[in-house]
Image 1 (cartoon, rainbow, N blue to C red):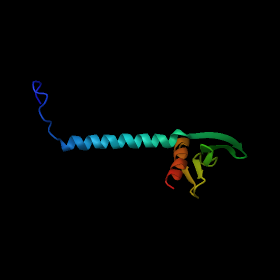
Image 2: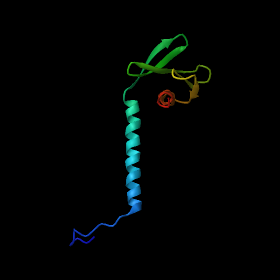
Image 3: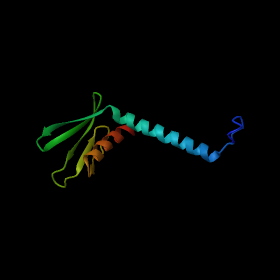
Image 4: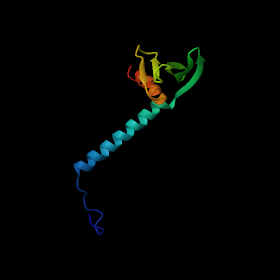
Length: 104
């Protein structure tokens, strides 16, 4: 396109169109993943074995996680399934509980 003729037709670039569509999809996915976490809250309570962290979505208790005194790993107990797993960080444990519910 020249600066003198602004009414010159634009050429269609399929690669640019693909990139724009991909960027829009990635942005939509990012916003959707943030929406899943937006109403999640974590609180804690003392148990006879130590601190237990509870993951809530509104009034629904999604599950609990705690640090194992044996190996220091974070153990998850999502209440939607019988799927205890161990993680290196508390953030990984919390995300695993949320994922267990989102894949139901």
